Image (cartoon, one colour):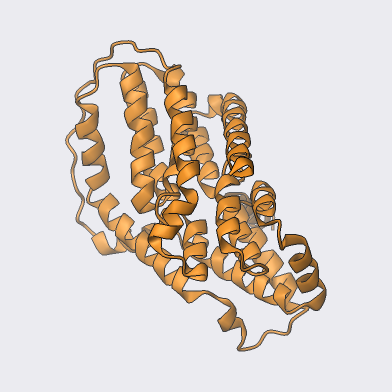
Amino acid sequence: MAKLIDKTFDFFKNEIVFSISLILAIISCFFVQPNANYLNYINWDTIILLFAIMLIVEVLKNLAIFEMFVRRLLRRIGSTRQIVLVLVFTCFISSIFITNDVSLIIFVPFSILALRKVNRSDLIIFTVSLQTIAANVGCMVLPIGAPHNIVMYTVSKIPFDTFFMILLPYVVVSMIFLAVLLFFVSNDDIVLPEMSKIEVNRKNFIKRVLSGVDYYLLLTFIALFILIGNLENISFFNSLFTRWIAGNEVLWGIFASQVISNVPAAILLSGFSSNYEAIIVGINIGGFGTLIASMANLISYKVLVRECGEFRAKYLLEFTVLNVILLVVLFCVYAIS
């Protein structure tokens, strides 16, 4: 019994967003009797698109395409500032196409390894903090760059170019913010060591690709869609959320993201408001701030703690300070626009 409790606790800790989403969805089922209409709650376009992106990313990752690309860039580097710049903007560029979560899963461990190779472990906290910010900025460029934007893109049917223009001011300001921070990195000379040859393992390739998909993320989406669908059918919550959210989508997007992260916030707000442009701005700005504001933030933290547990407290402090500053700056941009 004790082992079962420990396993349950570990699962909850590792999959906290899914666990909470599932519990809330189950509770909501007591208020709206389960029926065939539950299937209509789920935005299957979002689920299918996200699954397809995950499959493509897993194929590229298992073919070592990303690692080959980064190694070529690193061979041309000669200073600490350059290596941090490359590592940070690799996350920015890759998150545009493979989502911010996957970008950090791939490149944060690589960055820690690269900085250790050149004896600059002192730069790990700052670099990973900037990588996380960069990934959250890069995912704004295209609507396929992050799960929360995939949700909003499929729900709102806003064209690619319009989606880009909505978030362009925040991307530009965030890039300037990152560029300024990079000047605080010392410009010391470094010499990259020889790295082992990349070997592509083709054994059980399809199995490894399929097993690499984050099925709990997909199930999280399904649970959240059911929760929001049920809330919409409970008159009290429907009127309450509609009254609170209408006209305050940006503020609610920012606030909800800090508490439940921006993916659930996107699903929640889009269920009670059709002002999709404001919701898009709110949940993307809201991805900065607390550690749980974005799933990408949690991914970086989990990777860093696994690789460098001694940096846990210092990383939390530095990461939070930088994110809160950027959050305030971006909110000011929204307020004056």
